Each structure stands twice: as structure tokens, then as C-alpha cells.
Image (tube, rainbow, N blue to C red; front, side, top):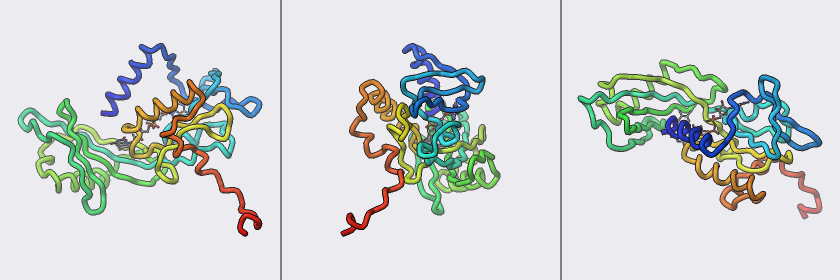
Length: 235
Ligand SMILES: Cc1cc2nc3c(=O)[nH]c(=O)nc-3n(C[C@H](O)[C@H](O)[C@H](O)COP(=O)(O)OP(=O)(O)OC[C@H]3O[C@@H](n4cnc5c(N)ncnc54)[C@H](O)[C@@H]3O)c2cc1C
């Protein structure tokens, strides 16, 4: 449950002594070709030996990022519905149901508190987060095909979020081309699932200066333009 996970992580950070500044980062602070922190929307600077850019689908929008450091991340819209399971219908589903209906992936996730989540559309529409009649219709239509009883349940929430997609839809983890700046973004459809491994790997890289083996295939340099091949190399 991403909402409970995020809330629990904030509490865990506070208990561990992490200082949280809830503000928008306006731009990256760069001095002598090294990232040294960020300037917040209110103009205050936060200086740091290392900066981790983890802005989800907005990671490429941070001001002050040199062109060769801009993460190639795009927003992929996903609409999702929440239904309530009244006591009369409980227990409704005992496990997650996943399927491909008419070529679209649909899943129904029962939560411990009785909520049923139906997701998700996948739309390449930039930063649009409008919930549309068509999106809700398609989700209900496809979910109904799998579990007809859902149309009896109260519809409690409709929402659209943005997944951070990368060119190969795998995450961007590790050092950028700018010294002092690490990336932890581009998790696309799996950012909740990949929270622990991302957190552990980035924390380990920051603490030891060594990139853990398991994230080496995901370093951002895989998207750097290949150096031109010379005539000698071709021969
Ligand atoms: C409908 C839907 C269903 C999904 N289902 C699943 C699933 O079943 N399993 C799964 O593993 N993943 C799922 N995902 C994907 C998952 O939500 C993402 O991969 C994950 O949220 C990415 O985490 P993140 O922390 O990198 O980015 P985000 O969750 O987008 O968080 C980035 C944060 O950075 C903040 N930020 C951005 N720019 C700035 C700035 N300049 N200053 C300050 N803060 C800033 C944003 O406000 C945001 O809080 C789903 C996504 C959607 C939309």
C-alpha cells in the first residue's frame, strides 16, 4: 500500500533523525563543476556533499541541471479507481487479480482495510493528470469483465498519477555526469516495489563511495550518446 508505505517512511526518517524540509527545490546549486546542494523555492540554499535527484517524473525539470545531466525521464499517466467493500460484501477478494483485457493491463488489489484498488491506464500525455470519463469507463469495463460483482461497490475515489518512465523504462540509479550528483529516478511502473533496493543501494553508495553491484546495470551513463566510431576502430 504506497500511501501507508510513504507515511511510514516519513515517520521512520524522523525517528532516525533525518531533517525534512518540505519545500520545492527550485534549482541545483553548482560550484566549480560540482553539485553542492539546491536552492529552495523560498530562496534558501541547502548545501550538501552529495545531492540525490529523486523527483519522479519531474526529475528533468529541476533548474540549473547541465544539459548532459538532464535525466531522460518522461511522465506516463496512470488513472486508478478506489472502491469500498461494505461489510455486506466482505470478504470480496482475497488476493490480487491481474489480467490483460482487450490488450490493456488491469488489476484489482484488495487492501487490508477493505478498500479495493482498480488500475491502471497507461497514457503518454505529458504532465496531464485529468481523470477522464474514458479512463474510468475502461477501467470499470475491464475490471467488470474479470470480477462482475465490482459494479455493486461504492466508487470512493478516482485519481491520475504520473509514472517516471525512462527510454528503456528501467530506473536511473547512481552517479550522473556531474560530480556530487546522484540520480534515483525513472522507476516507471515499479517504483513502490523497488523502494527498498533503491534506498539501500543509494544509501550504500553515499556511505561507502562504492556503487553496489546490483544497480550497476542501471547507471545513467547508459543513455549517454555513444562516441563516434573512428575509421581505425571499424577496421
Ligand atoms: C496509477 C499508478 C499505479 C502504479 N502502480 C504501481 C505498482 O503497483 N507498483 C509499483 O511498484 N509502482 C507503481 N506505480 C509507479 C510508482 O508510483 C512510481 O514508480 C514511484 O512513485 C516513483 O517513485 P519516485 O519517488 O521516484 O517518484 P514520485 O513518487 O513521483 O515522487 C517524486 C517526489 O518528488 C517531488 N518533487 C519533484 N520535483 C521536486 C522539486 N523540484 N522539489 C521538491 N520536490 C520535488 C514530487 O512532489 C514527489 O513527491 C504506479 C504509478 C501510477 C501512476
